[in-house]
Image (cartoon, rainbow, N blue to C red):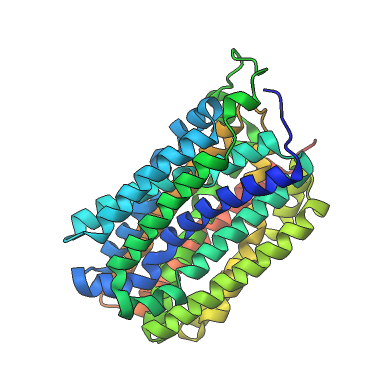
Amino acid sequence: MNRNIFPMHKAIIIFLVFAFGYYISSLLRAITATISPELISEFNLSSGDLGLLGGAYFLGFATVQIPLGYLLDSKGPKTIVSAFLGISMLGIILFSLSTNFTILLFSRFLIGVGVGACLMGPLTAYRAWFQEKIQQRTNSWMLMIGAIGLLSSSLPVQFLLPIIGWRLIFGILALLTLLCIMLTILFIPNWKEQDTNANLEDKGSLKEIWKNKFFISLVPIGFFSFGGLYAIQTLWAGPWMIKVSGYTPEESAKGLFIIYLSLLLSFLCWGYFVPKISKNVADAIKLLKIGAPLNLIVLVFIIYLGSKAGAFHLSLFVVSCIFLSLAQPAVGLAFSLTNVGKALTSFNLLIFIGAFVMQWIIGIIIDFTIYLGFSEILGFKAGMMFVLITSFFSYLFFLLKNIYYKT
């Protein structure tokens, strides 16, 4: 596939339109942490139910990743992102009208399916249309936009809850999604027009990706480390602050705002500096080896402090995970353009299946600990311990697989 590098003014428009979609996607991902007290009260949810509900988004997201890779490589981001956002809008509307847990769960799954292309579509487009030297930067800035979405899911949503309620909030999100679909159709270039010289017989291979040694080395990190981070960041940070730290729901929303603001600022800085220190796969591996253990150290302290660990410590945890963000663009750079969509979505599959599993398991661990007669605080600490142990062994696996890595 030949690359058609766009001039800066057009690249900025493409980035902003895709960023709007990813903003909505991230807001939807994390909003359950803020509205969880409302959902628990209205639908009488247990910790396991809440974990399953939050995880349904990730399960829906993961389900479409492999076919999404083929669709992006063949049909292009414009067609696929706009079509999938239509599915998401349907899920959002259904969620706002839910009358029982089953409908909530199914609509949350549909939302996950629909926003499944909101990051992979843009990354596929950037790989083909933007210069290689800014691949890490655009990835970091997309994640920064995602952090703005997470930020919007905290205090702004908490402020609106008593005024208009969670159902009308989802109605507004449906309208924003419709606007995003229209912008995507109007401003994102057609894929075929940009790639007319592509070798149509060279469509890439999924087998090539899953046999790649570098990709294999990242499998546990994608599943457990990313999965654990997303589980904490988008759901369990809120309940931790309420159940363990003793925050009120309003204080928890403020805590989430602090966490997501810290994440936003870290990605803003990271997007500026990372192209200077990570220009290829080898650089990404070196930085992952050095930086990946930082979040494990922070998590140890959170577990040790227990009820004394609040928004500041959880902010420190999500910021210390920033080195993990090197993995995704490195996967994109490790494969040819004919395989980049499938490579990125394969890695995303790992992340979001991991997020679903980790989010649900943490809830099950909390419920089971209480069932055994122990305190809820101990249950939360046990859930965090599960994330710590699995992430630690994932890092060791990555380290051993890349100990002799050469460019």
